[in-house]
Amino acid sequence: MSLSFEKWSTERLPALRELDSARRGLREFKRGTRFAIRQIHESYVVLLASHFQGFCRDLHDECADFFVRTISTEMLRNTVRIVLVLGRKLASGNATPGNIGSDFGRFGLEFWDEVRKLDAGNQDRQKELDRLNAWRNAIAHQHFDLSKLGGADLRLPLLRGWRTVCDRLAVSFDGVMRSHLALVNGVAPW
Image (cartoon, rainbow, N blue to C red):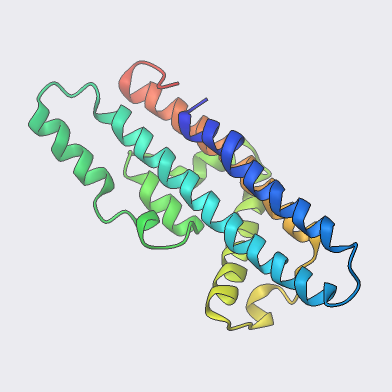
């Protein structure tokens, strides 16, 4: 397991569970509950998207560090690392399937093809990740176009489903990159 995945499991997911607890606490109050729950749901979407993006960026950094480790000259090692991370889409854009595929594709693999090969369910998870990011952007920019959001309202089962999607994708991303880096470098990174 990568350090990035360990951080996802021990820090990022527990932070999201804390928001679940805050939501449960609101049920004790009647007045303003609907509005407060809506705010928590919207906050949850933004936090989930940001924690998942953080995981992806951490994993990409960890992979870049490992990828260049076997390059003998420091100058070439630094140059290759810069090529891997400079202009990385995960540094300035959301963790959409396109941005993730572009950034991890720098390591010489068709990233999403490998992720889908690892688990057939990842094809649907990829679509849900797009939907999560559409909601994240709608919330962040306060522009709700239900035709782009799947027409659904934010409900707890949807939020929990997205958390599961991100968790399962994190497992797959970790596994795909472990296998790929082991193949390229001749030794497993974690």
